[in-house]
Length: 194
Length: 225
Image (cartoon, rainbow over all chains, first blue to last red; front, side, top):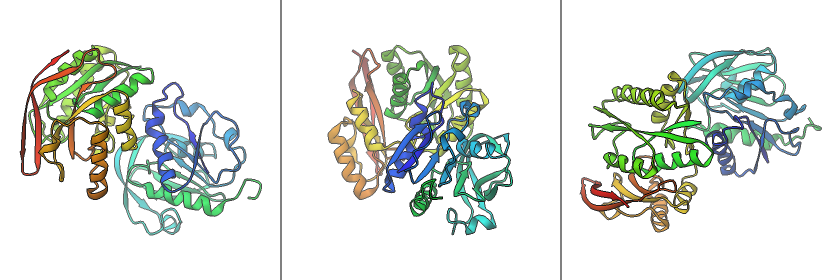
């Protein structure tokens, strides 16, 4: 089961249709069950195989006043942070959010490290759908796997199987979600085992 | 939140507006872009002139902006319409019926960002079969107003979008990969009734045309009942 974290503004539930449900559908397409929780809910279910943190609307900054860490609660298994989800992962591990707006399809180029990683292996430059007002600086815990002209677009944590993707892979790049789900299944470690 | 709904007259724009109403928002106005260019990249749909009847049926004001429909220039006209509507009706956001079109969605997102408005696309990447089921079960009365892809032909024009339509589309989808919701422009639709309408549109007269694999159902006379 993949745990899906919803960090949209709770006062605007229609955002779930646009930013959470599509991710859940893609995971189901790849044969995995999902469980959707809000960011404010308690610690993550340790029996899940991986965690996907969804993005939200361009105008939604509600997530910026919240923290992921109580939910993650020491989780060291696979995480895939999308857009605002990546911003939160990075900013809560030593990075800093910086205003940067990108809207629409942009070219994404894997770095040398990225082209060797399981998430991007075999991919040359491709287009990704960007919809964000912020990017995040990288602490030394993170490695850039792909970049756009303006900023880092895909990152990986140095120690844990944690990924961040600033653009929205659910749009035309659902293969990334498929690869993450496969990675999560292959690791299948609970926090106690890792 | 006070929302302006982009209205083409088709099912997606009106269902997206309905989804906003269902989740507690107010549709303060509809915004229709009327293109003089039948090849418009974003705004040409059959029967666009009848959005005034839909707005009247819903009791919601309509803002109409004309455009020459030239690529990218028509976006300036959309921006003007959104800006004008935002000021006139105190809008906080815009809702679109975009399902998969990155071209459409990203351009509207940019305009909303410039105008400090929220942008909502509740049908974005939806399960199209589930969406059509919801459309039918929620009480929308919709007809096929144009066909633009094989194997859709003139026999589809004016057809109601109901369970038998969905069944036929599913068969075609398996064989030809035609989008169930017509998101790729395979067909266009027109909404005669919606759960938030207080009156329904009755079609009194219509003309159909079909040539070179494309056709339209042009409503020439209609009234609210």
